Length: 415
Ligand code: GLC
Image 1: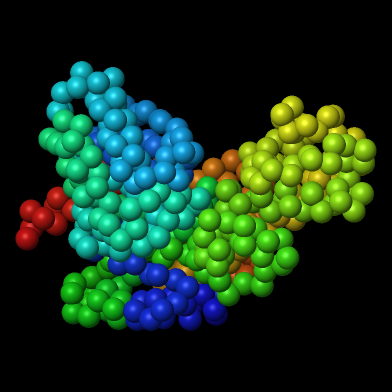
Image 2 (image 1 turned 90 degrees about the vertical axis):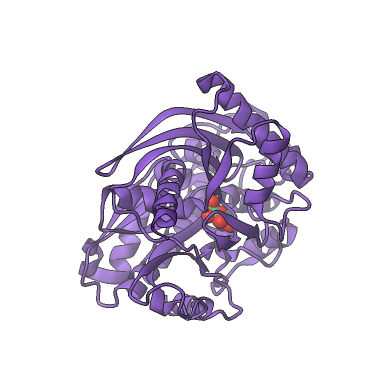
């Protein structure tokens, strides 16, 4: 937690550190925002499009939603193809739900990668994470790339009103309904967090907003690297598409949890400790074990047939489950420690109640993950842990983007 605070301090002051601490130029919503928006959520393997109506009084309704799988070839292809695919999905959505008509022209774009904001509706991609490598996007304004793609597909009547990170969307969704919510966390394919910071603590933005105002800061905590790593972590990192980066993310998120466990299983097989007599090529393909499969096995299920593992013997099941438990427990405890560090940064003596909006499949679905995080908070903070509450905020990143767009259009109207 001390190291975390050092890196937060450095990032807010504009120094080169592990935490980017990106100012978003937006504060939390009041709950009174109203309006209708199209929200587009690109975060990992899926692209989601939603039609969101904000009714005020903290109530948001999703009136239509669709999900598209991003083909792996597009994650690693050209940026142009990726954005053209996204624009096609938007057109498909409009045809399906709106008869192709321009019912909405304001788009809220959740783009869940590190972006340096130029304004609330524009920002440059700093680097790809989570296995994406699409060419020609780093350093470019991703909102402009989407606007251009929409235009070239004849959907230029839609424009990006707000560009936001999934953590910021999650915090916006959480705080729209509950004013004690001051932090948004994603524990899914990747991991990251944002929180409401006092503007006078953001040293790298001198004199911009009134000093007593608050601004949401996207921490990009997945890149935190002052944690001891073991041989499996180093091997995974070396083989990844972004070696040396996203150290915490590689220890505490869904995309990598299966890969760490797979590497341990392969080593145990090599030492003859499990799966004796099985095909030695079992689990040799990188990323062939997912966190979803781990979840099935720890709940008593089997590995999928394609993995090549026949029915698990009792002894093997026990060994495999212990490995999965160690890997997921470490992830949960790291995530809880990072949350505790941020809460203490906001409120040194824990004098106030803090609701943490959390989204992501690891947190929402992995057996025992939330419970382990709660144990860990209690270990770290003792009795004071009761001042922290998790609010599972499923699909918050999409609805939240619409809320961010509403906050942005309100701010524009006031200018
Ligand atoms: C990665 C991205 C970050 C995002 C997180 C969760 O860490 O860099 O922007 O919030 O994944 O999706």
